[in-house]
Length: 352
Ligand SMILES: Nc1ncnc2c1ncn2[C@@H]1O[C@H](COP(=O)(O)OP(=O)(O)O)[C@@H](O)[C@H]1O
Ligand SMILES: [Mg+2]
Image (cartoon, rainbow, N blue to C red):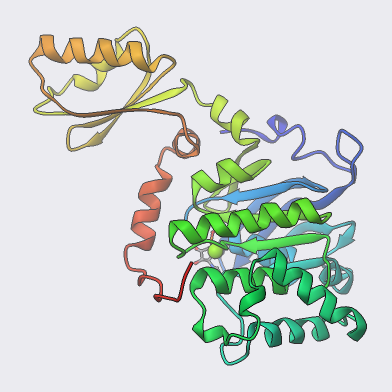
């Protein structure tokens, strides 16, 4: 596991990053206990202004608890968090004014129209009446909901409701935007459209985004830096590229064999190009290598010579899932299957 010393940017003190830009978020040794249970365990990181920072981890890792502490919704057990320089415990009002939050659960009022939902928030955040309409018009354009402005929220699909909530969270022009799993439960097309919205919004506004997700692919594509959290602890923090580079080998081979002998894992390990092998059960092996094509050739030759049939084989570039396996010994994918096996499918809606 990485130690604090390996987070040159993430754990630096003070309120300016190495390139002089001020930090938007500074979290130092933050802890949250629920009774005897430690949900967040001594986590430290800084987020630079203008960054898209991802918290990636399985269900129950402590992502929402971290967000709820940073956004003043629950008290901190120990440690500190500062949002654009304001301490969340000493100056919660200043923190609330400078941030927008999209909680994990959808919270728009279903009986109101899109526009009415936005108007209520604009009033709640004291957006002056003369600015409200222009602000709402601009946001509706940004999230591509202009033509639905008078539609009742209950008639919208999950993806459209998410986009409404994104607009709602930005109605008072916050500097920091917290989004807790904005794409969970959405179909792939809606997920992409939510991320496109966020990218588009970022190109129009000075905004720092902290987002949680358990989708490795979207964290990989859209975050400048990612903190991997597991069981309340920060296990790795870096850019997606650097995180993947920290895993030995640049390719992952997943191979399934029939009637593999007991020492098959060790034998695979002796292949020249193979850096690590993990037996995942049911004849399935996960093999890390720096050279996918050569390792595949060697592996197939060895299997043919040993008379061990290959049932399936795939070669991929390393993903954040491999990073998660590297630091935790478990697969994020498996954790999610376990966690979401009992979740009901999302309600069908109008359109993505
Ligand atoms: N109010 C609470 N009381 C007791 N335990 C909680 C509470 N909120 C969260 N937890 C526990 O803390 C852990 C982290 O939860 P959470 O932050 O929601 O994880 P994530 O958002 O990463 O899925 C989980 O084990 C969860 O059950
Ligand atoms: Mg959560």
